Image (cartoon, rainbow over all chains, first blue to last red):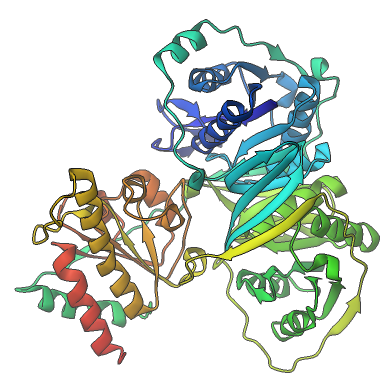
Length: 256
Length: 338
């Protein structure tokens, strides 16, 4: 089975992110593989282990995104491809989906394409479904349990109302949620292999497409209003007394 | 402005963020058309009128009985291509995101996702949305038509229903072709959903630190820790029940195996904005704060007076949650007459 895991590089979730001169700044926080995408890589590797084949990690981004791809390689992916082109600056999710779909087509013969549920920077969470739509493949979104039997993929989707079991014939796009199970840590051997890996960079010309024209723009970036709250500490001689006072305060605030 | 609102329902149960979206559409002025897809969904359309929709486009087809992204997206795209609305609003739900994304590809337009404020500028919408789990906000626009926007739950007020208010119902065709098959469904654990909750009581690492408790004999250290934490979460649950609240958790509590992931609040969990958020035994890591900082009021109960959670809290108790929570649940029951 030929499997692609699409990943993104993002600032670490512990980063203090601020708007500075109209740009996003995360100080000296490290750039890491998007935490959701680790679940996608894990799910992809488990399918390979169960059915044979190969897992190819694909990322769209700048040169630095090779580090995120190396993390995927260290986890056990067989190869990695960076899609990078100066013309992709300012690309929106629609454009990203078109580029990733073209990369998946260029890889060729792909059975399953795995994504994380969303990237923790843009938080849109629509690129997987959009990529599926561009490819014309079925979308099995927010999968918590994945079974592949021959060409048939069956997943349990995690939805607001519980779990919905949905199936489709491969090729298909899947997005993976945290319920799937913990992603593995990179192995020592994996890290060594990844450090030596030669990661090809494909340009838009390599993909045979022109730069997708962005339709979404984000003209203004703001820091959220700071929460100017002074904490009033409730004290008392016993838990009952504290609880009594606190309950009165909360009821008086009319938030119930 | 000619605005459409997609009414997200599961087997006829409408997610409340859909009604909030009708309210947001009304506030923009112009006509509001509800989109209702499914099988036997006239009652949903009727409710949409009561919440303010002028019209409803109803695709009522046995083939739409189960939600399948491809079929619902194709139905939406075909209607929009034919009738050219200025703006399509959807709630930011699992299905709302998926449909918005797919329809944007079909219609060669864009999506503004998980928006918390809308400002009309002529027929153009300037939307505000949180990014980096709310660490930043961006203003964003869609330069193609239709503009597709998904609205975050609880960011817009839910309109008052006007019982019996009529509207124009138009039957439209379904595009039922899809390569996915729905094979089954199992209900979740029920209870109040975090993203719709007005009140949330959350537990963290501190749930496992009840000094008065000793685990049953024969458990290893990890099992004993989880057992203790589950006892702690029973107290969180009891307070939540007294308040009609949803139960949340920190990532630390979820990662330690104390409670299922569905309860996780924060950057890699759910981003919530209740009126009241009570954090119990949660220190307040930046990822957690990002997910709940938009709560109207935050109350923190923690042993450590220096915990960062107190920096965003209106009221704080430095103490043992295992003693405070039962007393607090009792106090609320008494005062709220439950």
